[in-house]
Image 1 (cartoon, each protein chain N blue to C red):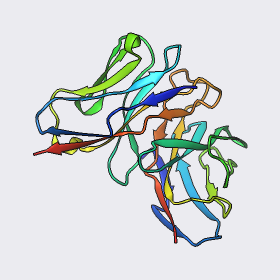
Image 2: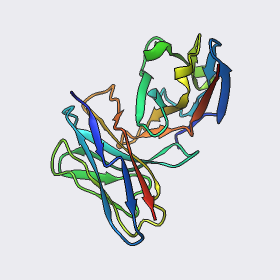
Image 3: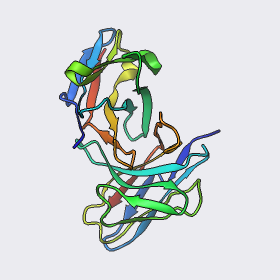
Length: 114
Length: 115
């Protein structure tokens, strides 16, 4: 069965520092992959998505992610974190069955130190 | 202003009551989804609908029901049979199967609390 793993429950970084959030997926073929961000009590906002082609994907708010087939990873990065980036981040893969549902990781909560 | 709306934002239910959560979209999307979010567990699919008048059970459909009478609306009813309904409920929509790069967009959510 497809699964998505986010190994870090919490990450704390200082404002201005770089950020990398890890995501690993399990599936034989190339999945469609997404990163969403959620502020407390809010819905999910799409940051970026990968379907095919260039393995480095640019998103909104200065985020990017790199798909690495050899490592089954789709890590999210940002070169310089802002205090407003504090939120929960979810990696997701689209199911290959007829539902087209999203299979989510359990999320990584980002805390930003001033 | 296009988007997905969910109402109410907060909902309180007594034991044994059925409640209905609203989800409306004006994006002209064919597909709509309901997810449940619990702390530390990510999101899990309750029901989905890929076309009007048709819907399918997701991974955790027990205790829930839905209808899809209009393209823009996909209400979710949490019945008294749902043993642990306290959660954050998120509705999503997408273009659907006709779009190979199908992407789901989410509403703001409804927080349901059982008293």
